[in-house]
Image (cartoon, rainbow, N blue to C red; front, side, top):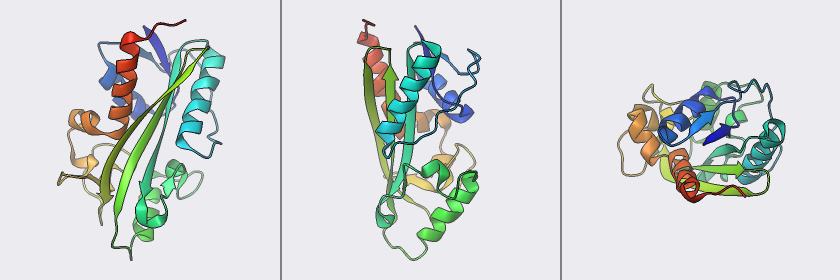
Length: 194
């Protein structure tokens, strides 16, 4: 089955293809020459994931899934949350976001956090959502060079390493995105397009 992953993020595409390899042919926007972005204007992760999946489906007419992911830090009221990718500003880098986050946590003793991913799948008739979550905390400094985004400062509960220090296959097996995609993959095993 061919499904479209509605993202322009090459890191996410690489992770998803690794997780779903052997089961589905995951097409990228580039594969189908769809040069399109969808502004994440919804106030929730679920809203943004649905908005992107339905928008890309309408443009491509191929069953499509999209995700939205947020890092939620307890002591700063769940920030950066839905604005995780743009936490330090509209055209900021991951490094800018990390610097701002570590600054916001400088005087905080509670550094607990969670990553949440919502995957939305649209087939033109129905839209389905799947959630993945992993709990952990924000480290005081960056560690590791794997991964992307906040991975160098997020340490999952029960581990001594940050996401950026983990083997990518292991990270995919325990991560928020991995869990959401696994739930989605389980759904696809029994999915019949109406």
